[in-house]
Figure 1 (cartoon, helix red, strand yellow):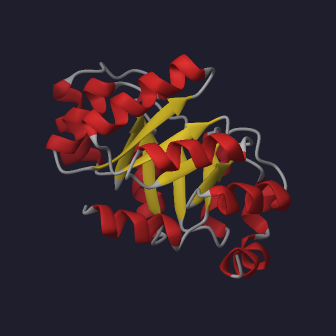
Figure 2: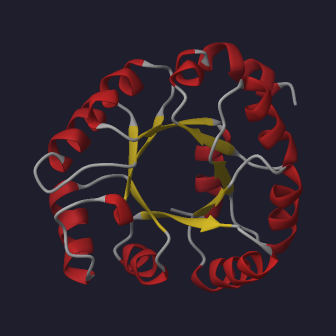
Amino acid sequence: MTTKKCYRLFKENPIIAAVRNPRDIYEAVSSETRIIFLLCGNIYNLKKIVEYVKASNKIIFVHLDLLKGFAQDTYFIKYLKDEIAPHGIISTKNALVSRAKQEGMITVQRLFLLDSSAMDVSVTSANKIKPDAVEILPGLVPKLIRSINKEIQIPIITGGFIETREEVLSCIQAGALSVTTSAKNLWRDYGEIKPLIDQL
C-alpha cells in the first residue's frame, strides 16, 4: 500500500478497536469502527477470527508478537499472507515487519517510547524499515506524538491507556491519525466522536 493510501485509511478511521480477548471480537465488529487490531489469537482460532472480521467488511491487522502457537519466522509470514490473509500486521520486531512488507502486507511497526534513548532508536528503525505506519506507545503524551511527527514521514497511530473521548481528541490534535483503544465505550461512541475529530 502506498503511503498516501495508508495515510487516508487511518485518517478516515480515527478510532481503531484493539481486541485483547477473542470474545470481544463480536462487539468490535458490531461497532462503527472499521479497523480492528487483533492483539490475541492462536493457531486454532486465528483463521476463523480473520474470516469473520473480513466477512463483516472490516479491516483486520494481527499483532504477530502476541500470537500463540506460531513460529516467528519467514515461513510463518508467507503462511499468514497466503492462508490466513489479514489485511495487515503489527509487530515490534524489525525482521517481521520487513518480511511482511516484502510479502506485500500492510505493516504497522509498534514503538515503545520509554525514554529519549528508546525514542532515538525507534525513529532510526522506522526511517530505515519504512513501515506503512507506526503505532507509538504510550499514546497519552502529545509532546511525543509531535516530536515523532517531525522525525518521520510515516503515518502515526498511537495507543495505550486511551479511555476517554478527550484523550482521543488530544492525540489526534497532536498529530496522530488514529488511536487504538480497548475501551469499548469508545468503540460504541465512534459515531459521536468522529464528527468532533473532523472539526479539529
